[in-house]
Image (cartoon, rainbow, N blue to C red; front, top):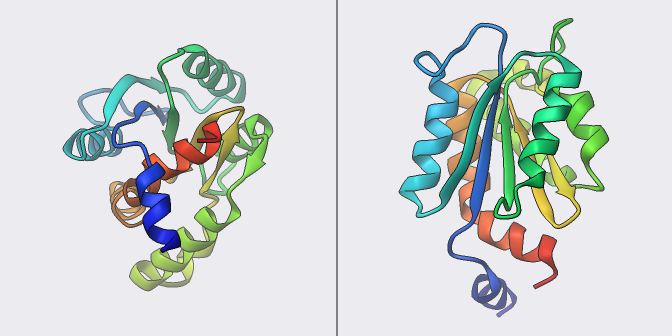
Length: 168
């Protein structure tokens, strides 16, 4: 019964701003950003914006703020920069933007990822949470990780996550 009431309050369509964090990708080589956009649209969600940003904390922070300033945007989905390499700074930036963390997202992502790639999954710093009434999600940059997170975790719950963040 509780699952049904959650489903009834879920939004059928949400607007998402997709951000790819990469020092090397452009629109022609951004398979992960392309996959996110395609998967969102296949499920009837809107892509309200898409940009690629260098892995520079100030630039990432500025672009997230720009995305959150768009009134129509419900969700900001980033990919890239979630590892532990010296240039990977997305986790720190996104952590600083969030008001509330959805710890279960990262935990479940690493669990599912472990089943596919083994112990290397522990190196992922994927996370999600809310910034005000908006949902912010940060995924690894690999297209396999993006597809796993989108199909197994985000798309089944995206409308519900936004409804909850809005207090609906």
